[in-house]
Amino acid sequence: MHDSRLDKLRQHLARRFARHVADEYILSDEAERRPYECDGLSAYRHLPLIVVLPGDTEEVQAVMRICHEERVPVVARGAGTGLSGGALPLEDGVLLSLARLNQILSIDPDNLCARVQPGVRNLAISEAARPYGLYYAPDPSSQIACSIGGNIAENAGGVHCLKYGLTVNNIQALEVITAEGERLRIGSRGPDSPGYDLLALMTGSEGMLGIVVEATVRLLPIPERAQVVMAAFDKVETAGQAVADIIAAGILPAGLEMMDNPSLQAAEDFVHAGYPVEAAAILLCEVDGDNEAVSEDIARVRRRLLDSGATEVRTAMNEEERARFWAGRKAAFPAVGRISPDYYCMDGTIPRKHLPRVLREIAEMSGRFGLRAANVFHAGDGNLHPLILYDGNHPGELERAEEFGGRILELCVEVGGTITGEHGVGLEKINQMCAQFPPEELQTFHAIKAAFDPLGLLNPGKAIPTLNRCAEFGAMHVKAGDLRFPHLERF
View 1 (cartoon, rainbow, N blue to C red):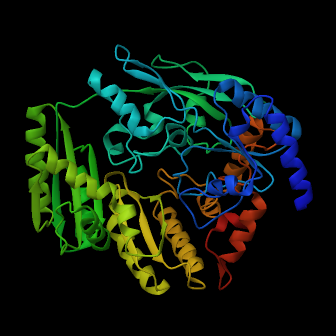
View 2 (view 1 turned 90 degrees about the vertical axis):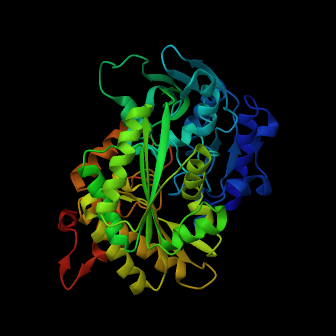
View 3 (view 1 turned 90 degrees about the horizontal axis):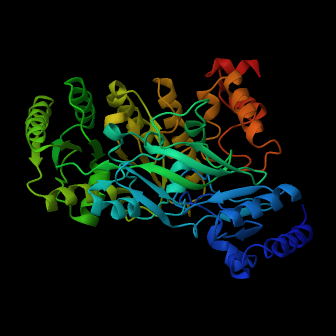
């Protein structure tokens, strides 16, 4: 579509939207649209055709009906903290920001739940629930800024998801606007709902099946006590094995996190968390519950860590030290950003028993690609976050970083894991979906998409690759006449 046609379409949509949304919330000038050109994965940028910020559910419905009538694609956006390009806009499409739908509608302490709009920040839910002795468990590192709508779209996790689960395990009901502008209610406050589990299907669907306008989230009682142990190791592989040893001992920590030397050094310089900067890796292991149970579990964790080869084990002596230990981990991403002009954040998940092998192979790949890697991840559930350091000002470095990242994800699949744990697929990992799924499963995904969005207007081009794309990806991986992913031969 030529620029003149885009300009006419932009003006036309602005006039139609203005009948339902105040002019100040319809952004059509280039300078106004520029802040929406990317999400947290800033290596990819597209300027949206137009941005609209509806203020309530009825305005969302009106926008969606207009877009359906005009056959214009729509990309929904939360706080823009996503890390897979899932909210990357289209030059011929509408960017639908849900930032104004930011109200906590109710806290229900008797039924341990809260009703919230999608623009509510993750941390704000726990802050509102704290006077009732409750909190919302999923806690992404970006929880101070990320929105619950985005968490639902990507099925976000956090440092405590080992014990308390991902977003999908903490959502009870959703209100969703379809591509046609219809309003659906999915799930209920009860323990179960009849029919297909559309709630689980919608969670993690990356804005491809509908627009969430309200969520009922599960709240939990704040534990009587939480305590964290920090352990240092002289080898990354030893720390990886210690993770498997803790779980094998029958201990279920609230959180079990790992950082290698580059990431812990960066975090220590940034936050001054008290990390041993000479260590090859550290583990943070938190247990929570009643006082007696925590005391017993802390003692068991300490013994297991020492038996597994820890060179130092330190227990947080008070809440201030516990918060400091976690502050370093949660600030790891921005801390690494201080030591490199750019970094490329990966997100894959593997069986815990393969942690030592995968970490060793990432180090070998780092040498082959000539790029440093800092590893920060949810070790307890095998969710890796390698940060590949590069300089986008140097020609070819971004492309090498992308190839390096792709190989890490393919390695995750190779050992029985998956290409995402909580960041979603978006645009970034769409080729690696071809390594993860055979054609029959991809066709099923497309059938589900067509059932919800027959015209393909919701976040097109994301998350689910076409079969042709996978055929091209497979051809790229033919080496010496052998296809690394044999199922792709059937395309």
